[in-house]
Image (cartoon, rainbow, N blue to C red; front, side):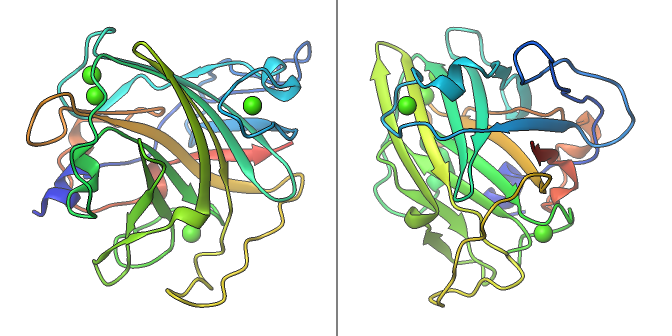
Amino acid sequence: MSGYASNLAIFITIFFVTCQNPNTGVTNQPQETGARPTFVTMQGTPALDGSGSDDIWERTEWQPISHLWAGAQPTPDDFTGRYKLAWDENNLYILAETTDDSLLDALQTLERFWDDDCLVVLLDEDASGGEYEFSYNAFAYHIALDGQVADMAPDSSFRFFDGHCLSRRISRDNTSTWEIAVRVYDGKQYTDGGDNVPKLLKKGKKMGFALAYCDNDRSPERESFMGNVAIPEAQKSRGRLNADAFGILELR
Ligand SMILES: [Ca+2]
Ligand SMILES: [Ca+2]
Ligand SMILES: [Ca+2]
Ligand SMILES: [Ca+2]
């Protein structure tokens, strides 16, 4: 199995749901439904400056990045992560706060981009689920510390997708705040080098979504891969990617 495939080897259906809190407008209380986890996100446009002091973020609750997908279980000092979501007509917004004891940006090429510290946005625009290793059925945007965005194309080459995720990051001591605007593309229409136009987002839209962090501090390969949804143990060694494991993100 290739390093990329084994690193991202995963995924299946999971079982908790976030639901709306009538007091704050945004929710997060997990519920057992037997279906894919569902995240509800509210409309609002933050200033993309790397600071979470926006009205929409103050009205939104944190959710954890706490599930081990691959590698070693980190201690809280090694890695802790949490995030908030919002949307407007043009973008899905992510505010992520990661605590990492050593920020590593050793690789300056597309080679093994997942072995540097990076935030990973997994997006399945039509919530179809299914394989995406050899298609754009879903995107897996790896956002590096320098803001560059990498993913694997259907032909198995690695490419930059910098225009798909604009981000600002502020790091103080061991804590980084990432504020990200994600353009949403229809993967069925998307072509490399083509005239691809992002979709306009509307209330009620549902997308497949997951968020993860690759933590490497000093090793030749990534040390920990932590995600926001649970992956059953039996699925972690699977070599095939599948968007069925993503949560369902509903725009409210
Ligand atoms: Ca901001
Ligand atoms: Ca670390
Ligand atoms: Ca899809
Ligand atoms: Ca690190």
